[in-house]
Amino acid sequence: MRHLNDLEIIDSINRGNVSDFSLLVDRYKDRAYSLLKRLLKNEMDAEEALQDSFLKAYNSLHGFRQDSQFSTWFYKIVYNTGLTVISSKKRKIEQEMSSIDNEFDIGVFDDEVYSTTDNVTDYILKIVDKLPVRGALVVILFYMDGMSLNEISQVMGISLVNAKVLLHRSRNALKNLLLKHNYQEEML
Image (cartoon, rainbow, N blue to C red; front, side):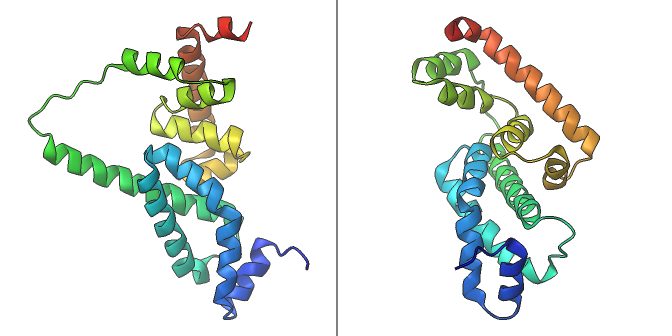
């Protein structure tokens, strides 16, 4: 059996073979879930947002213009779905906590991350999670998912220049967090 590319699968789906959508789900579910889990920081929310993303993609597949890769188009849906979940959660929290000042002690979290991590990759990923959402996302898309800055700009709905600036600032913030934890000593 030959390996079908995304456009061949989409053509098949548009011709009525709706079960072929499962091929796209299998191809993109792990990376999209990983992205949502990092974005939302909650597995259940990530699973729900992933299902919503696939449903949105399926319902909009007839409108896919093929002027970009399917993966870029789909990750834009995933990203926007994640942002929608975040904004709705923020609104809910703001309503529930309107009279309470909520302070977060970052130092305690830093010590917890450092003490519960067994290997270098896990430690770096936990530090990346401490970056602002957009900063963490651009680092993950660029380094872990291997997306180009052009693809990242399309997914995040920002200009290429802004994607470059965001990646640069995120790298610097990550470097500062690692230096703050004296991580270079751990590497020696």
